[in-house]
Amino acid sequence: MSDAVSREPARDPQDLERMLIERQWAGDIEGMLALFEPDAVVDSGTGELIRGRGAMRALFEKGLAEGRRFQRGEQRPALVNGDLALTSTKLPDGSITSEVARRHADGTWLWVIDRYSVT
Figure 1 (cartoon, rainbow, N blue to C red):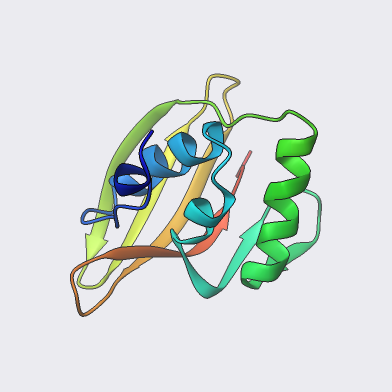
Figure 2: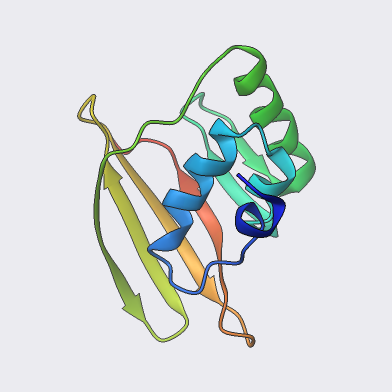
């Protein structure tokens, strides 16, 4: 994957999930972080909320070091209301992700809240 493709901003909230998976599989942690607002909150399912890019970087680095890979699933259509969107994906193991994205003035989307699994 070229840097130009891997660092392309999301122009549709539906693009965020695909981009995150592609970047994770490529080992592009900075590209993964670029899909989140600087003060985003992530619930990785460990019982502790991860806040901000520094903490997310550590989480993503740990996951890559352990060989964990995000899986593609059945992405549901985004529910958009103005500059906010709810995105979700049903993963192959049956768990469901849920995320909130915000549209910025330049038309790009970034996640502000990410919950790995709601089940």
